[in-house]
Length: 439
Image 1: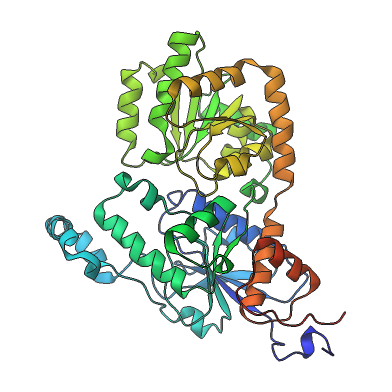
Image 2: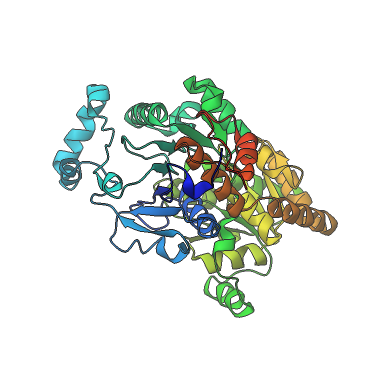
């Protein structure tokens, strides 16, 4: 086709909205890190005039704005992602909230609200919207939906019947509405195509990377300050995760007790991450196993402290029983921290040959692998090198280029050779490809 990209019908720069609304700092965990990584990666794409508008609940988008540059900027939303106003008001009245929670399960899908656009992205003239987390909204704008995982189907006992129903109704609605559904691993793609019957051509794989590249490099003073503030022991294993039941803190506690009592190895543990409702049970079990003095639960830490903890730690352990990706593994690899992790769901795919693996339901095997990693200097050095190489093979800039290729494909924009190559690697694009513009 003659001409250049600028001479084509879609001469205006591509305008993409990224849903970056979130209610509370630190609570969204890994999904929040994905949004930061995406912001970092898209900000590096300075080779085109495409625009990336990060939809935020606050006018200044203070949580994501520091990571935006280049063609990225904040787009304040006209509404909150939290749901209907009357439901938020209801939740603020204890008696009404109690009554509502008792009657809601019997009302079924009638109580499930599938959000619709408030018009912000339509008024902004957006060509495509990317939902990089499970929550989304219905819109006439073509969309990319990234649900991450279907944990509620595999571990239903961790959810109420209403929570399971809400996820099913909303996830299926957003998958049906989306032009492309994105998972971060081949395992995730296989799972969602099987569970939801989606055509494989509609589901694409775009891997993540370490988000730590978006954060400032810690100085020695930062590392010393972190060590002093948290009163860290000289050597410890590190476990960064919110205290959700599926993160498997309880099994890790059993393993630490076995290592101490049966293998003669006391392994101090530093556990970071937001303390949610399940933390009380974790703390109680730690007391029962006499692990109080061996474990530090330091809560949510700032990015510079997180990087410092990876660097100070002797190793990182990740016993999670369900993950769609497992960002802490790649973060540890990035910082050169040797890793032992669970062998379930997507984790073997993410870890490759750069980590020790263990089953999630065998505390004695977890203990054996931890003790092996703790004692063997040569093993830690080898895994550290393999981890760094694994992390170097992934980057948010490359992930952003893959997403950009999908945005262009969905909106029938001109695709260059790189776009086509990235689409072929990611998946079979569900939208007919436009001709490549001559160079």
